[in-house]
Length: 123
Image 1 (cartoon, helix red, strand yellow):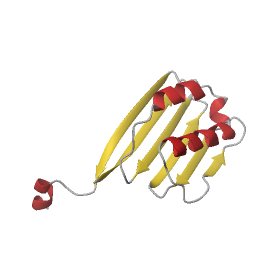
Image 2 (cartoon, helix red, strand yellow):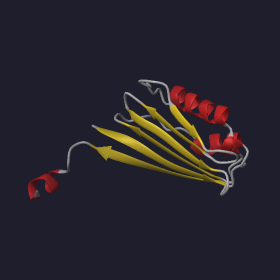
Image 3 (cartoon, rainbow, N blue to C red):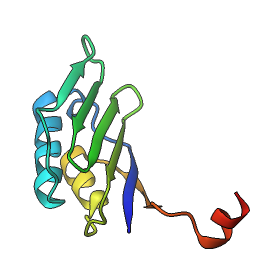
Image 4 (tube, rainbow, N blue to C red):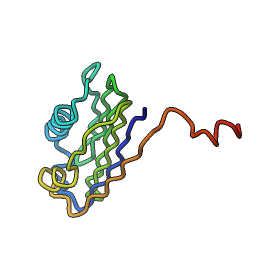
């Protein structure tokens, strides 16, 4: 058994979209639905003053979902960790459509809960 974690960086985003709190809430809602996630409480958000970015965190029964936007650089960073494997999601398509990202880098990391046999014997 293992979990999975996604680390996503989107660049070339529309700076105005990266300051839009409702747009970020909608992103979390969509990811929650599409990945069948289970929030244990409402997401917490911090909007920096003026044209500053947004930081968001949602505690999940599966672990967590977090984002940070940087309008001054046109970038959005997203992290989702799930204690159980999940189906794939087209993060690139979503972020290109919703935030006008020109490039999206998605890294999926499998998080095994047991060390491989050769590692546990060496410890």
